Image (cartoon, rainbow, N blue to C red; front, side, top):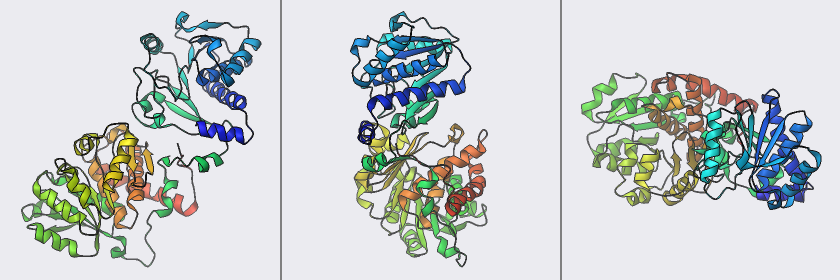
Length: 492
């Protein structure tokens, strides 16, 4: 954002104008959502505070009652923030009051302009107490750029943070708007245009996007009019002997996602269980590693999923290594990852072909142990392994070895249910079977999975996800064929 501001100034917009536009956007957002009532504005010592002074000026000009409280003194301001603080003093008869004199009034709206995205130190005990009082009073809160106390770089809470009903940010979202726990504090995020040219993105080239269909719709597979099932790929899914539902969910999801064929490879002892499932899923028994390798010889089987319900055993590990060495696209999920936790180098050394790994936080920690925020950890794992890493959660991060990152945020909390991850793995392996790249398949699969969860909502069980996939796929194809880019991914 510092670079974006610099480019805007280079293009003819002054810093004073940018801050004026930012503060006005905050005021306009507030006025469109609430009827006229007293507003308390909390201004910090930096540019965030300058935005607060601008918002105060525009609100007062529109007839709103303003109380403005400042952390520190106006003498601490510099540059654009000082300009707008002095403009407020010149134009308003309202006093600038010390923050420590604030007494919360429950009927007021609070504008939080204390600390922005650049916060680098923990919140003090006094400010934490203020946050608690505001929250306890039930005051609506409008945050400027980010809720105070949230790191813009990581979404971490810096000791304490003030939850917002609405956060008004500028030009693009920051990591802290999408990564938890910060995303849980931001409320509705409004992106305001303050005059930064769109061409700035090409210059900055950040390489991080919020997931949306326009990022991958052009590469989404659609059956050819003269095609047949073998042109749509054949997904092979390892089926375990105990948790047999996992592989069946993955296989059904793969068929729903358009794989021409979907097979479950299992031990003969479990054949009858799988054979009584979906009649459209092929069941292929194998006795040992050698016979599993014979299944992989079939060139029409072009994508393999190892993990859902497979069991944590030396056999699962050996079968995963066999799949990775087969020259086929591979998805490793759940047990297919856990079997390498004592020897992650064996996994890294085996990845030579397109591969997607889909760990949740616990599996990721056991396998890699990296520290840092979610984007950095996923990127590092992807670089080290050569695989696309899909680090699951409400803020799923998808990282490519070339440092591209997508953050997915469209899933609903109801998705946290048994079997949902198996469906996701089946979706991704189906897209890879249809020749989608590993990164695009992971990105598209995650968005489609999240959209399906939002369509179902409360009461969701994993089986439901497979049944609404046709509706989500229809929407994606409409975007692809008619260029309906309504849900545009944004660089952040």
